[in-house]
Image (tube, rainbow, N blue to C red; front, side, top):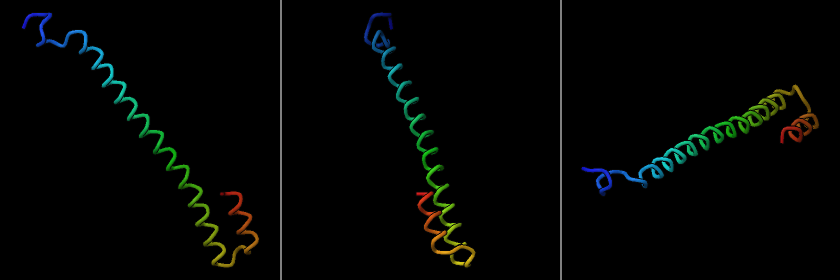
Length: 73
């Protein structure tokens, strides 16, 4: 088709492509930051599980467990 007719992308094609690129970058950033948030939250849960295990084995007292729990949460 010849330039200037509806078969080409025209001026709207460039802005549509830019919008698509911005959306893709936004989704990638959301996924990246969401993964980091999940990793940081799971770290404190793992530490709390270790403290629970130490309490169950009698390595620490209930008071020590509560102190650890307050620091983590």
